[in-house]
Amino acid sequence: MGSLLLRCGCLAELLRFRHSEDKVTRTETNCKMADEVAGSKLFVVLSVAGLVSGFLTCILMYRHTEAPIFSGVVFALFLTVPLAISGILDSYFKALILMAVTTAAYSVAAFVAIGIQMSNPQIILPSEVGSELASPTALFDGGLAGGFLVFGAVVLLCRTGISMRTLFLRVFLGTILGGLLGVVGWALSASVGVTTWHLLHALHIAGVDDGQTSRMYSVYLVWQTGVAMAVGIMLWGTPVRVVEMMEFFGVRDL
Image (spheres, rainbow, N blue to C red):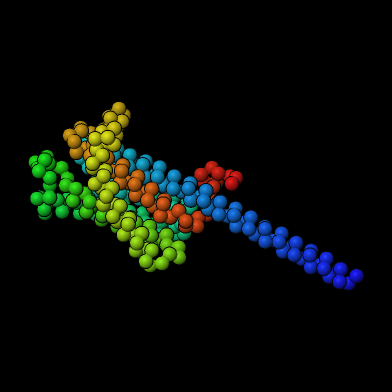
């Protein structure tokens, strides 16, 4: 009889252990699902934020061939706010640093591109000589500078236990992407730039399109949208404040 009671007690203990283990597993699964949903939401929000930021930067170009030097604050704001709300930027100090660096990225990129082109006029393509158009080399170098600042700041300020090797790799890839987006944005002026110009012209806030305007429209839209999307991908696995993210983006139940 005592042996039977002992066996029953062991069985009950085993069942309680299994129930507890199943509960932990379900909790971990729910947390992973929550992180996945929050991560995908953050990616979408950053992508849209980059697109809106690029469009607003185009509006700031009104009656100018380029956006004002302070225009970097627009992209900085649209990039920093979602990261702060998600908790990836865990302090106001980090948010302010990211705002400052990202704002400066536009000015630095512009100065680098203009400086390289002015000091090396031979890099302008023969078909563009005399038309005051930018060379792919200058655009790439300017994009490199801007990408290095943005991705360097994001990776350093949002670092969550990644190795130094991974950190440098992400900054390197982000820098190269920034350069490529500068060239691609300029190349897509006939589609992205012209379409944007017609939209702004319909709203009576577009400048005279002398070729340069639509090209800059395309550069701003492509570069800011592409960089914001890349940041979302780069931070996909980073833990976020799930509850705050869900409530902010309107997702109440998993």
